[in-house]
Length: 274
Image (cartoon, rainbow, N blue to C red; front, side, top):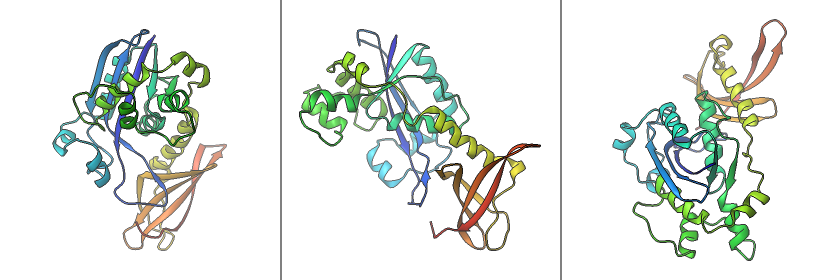
């Protein structure tokens, strides 16, 4: 079995909204380990952005990736294909917290890529808290844990994907992994099925046959922000913008039509600002 310690860096929307925006992956870093947790390979690639052309100010401050690096990056689909080749078929993912896994699944679904390439993932941040903390503590940062364990400093800065993946792999070697396997189910959260269902709704919205959401004021077709969405049961809420009347939200309900399969029913409502 191959063990893959994964870390991602991602970008996000520049302004706050009432709905969630997708985190666009801009770097994938990983360390490959054998069953003895010996390092057998490293992976690092920059992703050229296609959703957000500029870095969020907070992201720019945290990560150490230049605009030039992003401009010369590789398409997400090609980076992910190379990552899968690096991982090999029989592998397990490990990450510091499960947010990286959720972001990965979001991006796979956004680009219409398979969601079942990986079936097991373990949260090493949770494992550290369970094995190394004597009392309930807030989630510890990777840097804090590295310092507490006296792990030798690596070349490279924190918040670069490969550097963080290498530090996470070193922490992993200090943990009782049999206890981790016994206490964690090894499943994604949210599950691949949930994410696939959500993005099926997104693709329904994007189908040309469904038309564009109409402004609730002038009833004219309006621009859709496909990266800004939220889900409530069987409905999806997306942010739209009318050139004359500004922003509004469109509630998309998927309905099964016996003659034409699944189609979308839209209801627009005013949306206050950016």
